[in-house]
Structure formats: C-alpha cells, structure tokens
Amino acid sequence: MRIAIYHTNPTAKDADPRDDHYGQMFEDMLRPEMPGAEFVHFEVVAGVFPDSPTEFDAVVITGSSAFVTDGSAWMETLFAHIRMIDEAGTKLFAACFGHQAVGVALGGKVEDREIMLGAPAIDVVVDKGWMQPAAGSLRLFGGNFQQVVAVPEALEVVASHPDCPVAMMAKGAHLMTVQFHPEFSAEYMHRYVDQISAHISDDTAAAARQAFEAGADGAVFVKWAAAFLTS
Image (cartoon, rainbow, N blue to C red; front, side, top):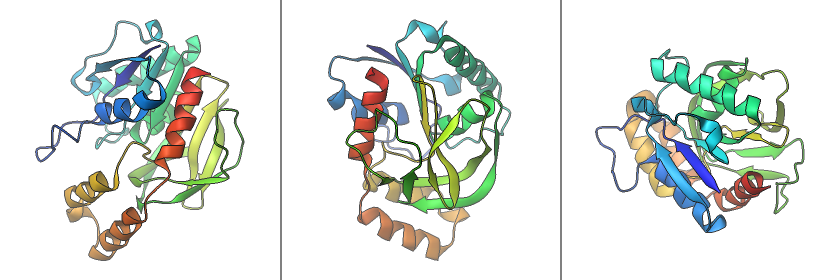
C-alpha cells in the first residue's frame, strides 16, 4: 500500500523535532501493523499537497494546533482534497483536527467547546468489522478545544462520549475519523499540557496528568486503524 500522510500541524517553537512531528507519529504507530506499506508525507500546512490524493491507496490526516474554523487558505485546499477522496472512495483515516476537517468539508459543523483533556473512554455505538480486537469502549488521549457538533449527511457516529457525542465517524468502507489521539504517548501528552498551560486551570492540568499516567488504549485502536486501512 501507498499511504499519504497529511501533516497539518504548524511547528511549535518549543517542539522537539525528534518526537513532536504528528505525521511521523502516525507512521510510527501504523508501521508495525502494516510492515509492507509505503508512507509518503506532505506538509500540507505549508501548502504542499499531492497532485491528486486518489493516486494513493489511503490518506491519513493528522491533528493540529490550528482550528478548522481559522479560514486559512491551506485548509480550503485540504477540504477540497477530502471531498475528492470521499467521492473517489479512497480510504481516509483522520484524527482530531483531521476528524473535524472531514466534518466541515463534507457539510457538517464544528464549534468551540470546553477542552477535553485526559484519557476519556469512548463507547462504541455501531460495531464495524475492522474493530478487532472487539471492545465496547476505548480510552484515548485527548486535548481538543473544538468538536464536530453536526454530523455530515451520509456519515454515521460509531463511537461517542457524554462530553463529545461525535467521538468517531465513519462512511461506508472508505472513511473513518476519531476525535482523540491513538498516536500520542503519555510522555507527549505531558509536554502538550506544558504547551497549553496558559489556557487551562491548574486543577485541569493536574487531573489530566493523573489520567495520562493511567494509560490509554492506543495499542488497540491502531489495530482497528490498520484493519480499516487494509480491509
């Protein structure tokens, strides 16, 4: 398989170039489950896109510190690519910002919400064949300030949380998105709290750090993602 990874995160001034590249995080996450895959990275936040996303077997869209409501020119190109990918039936897996970008591009709505920071347990509400090993719920790291609040027509919610009803979306056999972060480690999440400390309370930060140490189910979700991409 040839998989395009759309890296959508502007590089933070205090980012560690060895560990904080979201596109590389996804490759590192998926490669053990997809050893024969070729991963091709695109810095779409800098306006670098493939000529056609449908030349790839699958596309992965990362998270971002940017908001999908920012109105940046590169985001309009991203939305256009998402529509092309959907229309062609090319596999698309997107997380956090990517999940929200899919929502906006296909006719849904994203709004600001109180940050969900920690490792919330999302409940599966629609079973999919690629959800193997089977699980009724998964804990995933999160730190999002925006959410999908209106689901595009033809997409379905497949996992939910009381404070984030649209936790995962899917369409047919070709599109799957998740609001949270299977690719992040607890170590990275602690650095993320440091980066956003000016925007959250000390109590919120402390509770989140405690949740990080309890761990998450990213190792299960990556099997779901790989099964989805290869099915």
